[in-house]
Image (cartoon, rainbow, N blue to C red; front, top):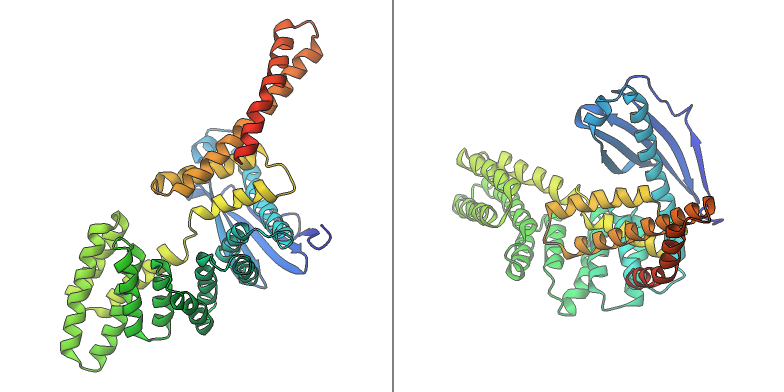
Length: 401
């Protein structure tokens, strides 16, 4: 792995502080010609270890790791245990970045459009845009009918404010009569940023026409109307402004009907602002909520993609600890979004790999028992059964994953 040879240089001696409320780690990471800075700190009151990853001073992404505060508090060596947790989470992010770039290089030697799209999405949501773009382009080269890669590439351009390039790539789908709601929603966002509100409204409406429960598109449409409403009010176009306010209220009812508790709560805030005719406040509520829920939040399936890529293309065996970490994240995601089949699929793969791990561990335990006492008949018999009949079990797991 000459190109991706990793060099980690610690700043000082990990800057570990004595206070349990303030434990931190700082490290530099070189991957090929790229330089990253990773810093991890504790938020003890929240039960969170927070890791931030920077490149050239720009924050790329944040990882929040939850831990049990009660378990720590009940232990006399709580400070030491917390330090161990911080170091473990810190190192896991470093290993993940290193592994991601390693897999990326290896994938460019393979013709697997699906894998290129998945790793492209991981890079996209870690804001490493140049790598994301290369993988989406490769996926499109391998499969010109993989329309989702066109949309992800469009989003990659949109997040970088390369709006004309986003329009160009999405227009290719429109010209090919592709009618995906996500495509129309993204085109609407691009037009909204270019202050072409009429076209933005049309695209958001097209997205909702094809998916009447598309909550993000409802919020995007509401923000586009609110932005235009401020312009109409400033230009004293009272009749059009009143119609826009009524339309906004109708949209809030739609979100209240189709949305979840958080969406409904936000609708209530927007409605209160509209009643007070505080249009700037209504727009602020819409924009802040959209940024928090749909822009800064990483989709839960990205964790599944990270696991899938390491499982199929990683050089090293996935450890029990790492399997447990993936399992916790996806189990939490499944609880929050039980209607996503991809999440259940990746969770199933993780559980199968955990079965494989403990099966092989059990096999080693039987071998240890027979090594210590070769006359241990039950252990000898069970070892023979596991070695013979277990091959089918392992073959089944291999075939599935």
